[in-house]
Length: 566
Ligand code: F6P
Image (tube, rainbow, N blue to C red; front, side, top):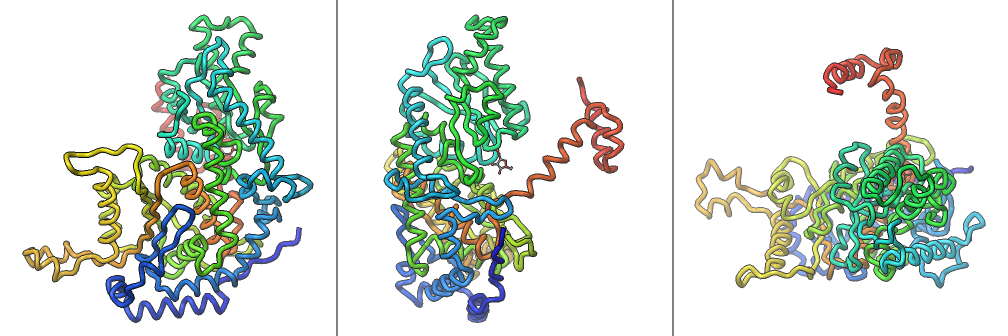
């Protein structure tokens, strides 16, 4: 396959122009307080509406004129062309020779027939699968689908890992107030048996439905957990007298009624014993970390219902359209991607905090870690040549206000620059007044206070004016000029969650394009998987395998063998 080499962004005149702009800002001294004073329209010029999200970049270390430089560089690395290629099914994931079509997962049904890729009517196939999922979800929600003893399903247990877990669990947590069918979900991912042991505690096997989610259906963790869950189910049903352990037919029927699967590998699903009628497919052009809006989200369609799932998809689609169609200087999705490049490559920021001021988004940073770091944590470009600048910043975070009492100290006063995205919503599903004080407003007050403190800081004179003893003054100074982006939504609806995910998917794509990275492969996870297969036999007894290990690994295994208690 012919590969178009990436443009080396760092060699373009547009990069040089951005470098010159950066040097100029450094020379004049970055001073957000001054920039706001000099330009009364700064907040307005640097704020954007994306669907129902209001996004404020004015507390970032940019000026209104920076936007054009960002847009110019994005065009110089052919972002518009690469976006068109992605949306139309060109195999831009060239190391796996695959199209990258997660944007097709959320295209409306009316667009069926408009996107034929590698002979496949993509939107039609997506919609056909969604219809099957929705029919199944409706049956489970209404109680028409029951467990083997005729009881309505009350808990769905998603077994998957990486993209087959992080997206669904994050969205499940985010949308909890919308659960309306008396069905809860649990998510098992880790191969550590402790995970399954804890997540099955208190479950009634008669009312539990397992969804085994694996794109490849070969992932060690997922298949091990799926087998363990099957054993758990059969043992528990047997213990309750619901099935007879000696009856192969009853066991097969129990598996049929309590296990469904989601995969691109339907042959392996059948091998596991799951009825192909109860398996939902997707396609190899959906990357694991870009798959929550495919059949991978089946647990969500069951818990929240097809209507909510459709709203969720509409949120993604709104951002996809905006990203592809909005002029780059006004395109906040492109601008946020370029701003991450700005911080990573010009300010040398090694990490990026994502701080949701909404407890329901508590898994959002973990979800983003896979999306961003598995996508852009790479040292070679899509043509195999080394990258020409730093890539892949570390994404991390915790919900406010918990983070404030943990690591914000370092963001405010540490020696490194950490750009931070704050995400908050105007409305809460759980309003509460503490006396006269609306607690959601108290919460929002903290979000606004933090971004203000980070931007404007506190000078030594201001500290002194509070009567602080001179020797303590330096410790109480806040430098300010610590960049934040505020993403303010109306309510954390299914639509808004779709918007947020698509926003970060596209930001990741923008960064990857500037760096010349194939953001859709993940070869970096393979070596560890391969070595685990080789090392595992050495752990328990295979002395030949042990002898082949390095000295450190051997010593660790010897420690284990000496200390194990079984
Ligand atoms: O960790 C590597 C990875 O391939 C991820 O990209 C993926 O989301 C995860 O494993 C799970 O893969 P699967 O869905 O095939 O089980």
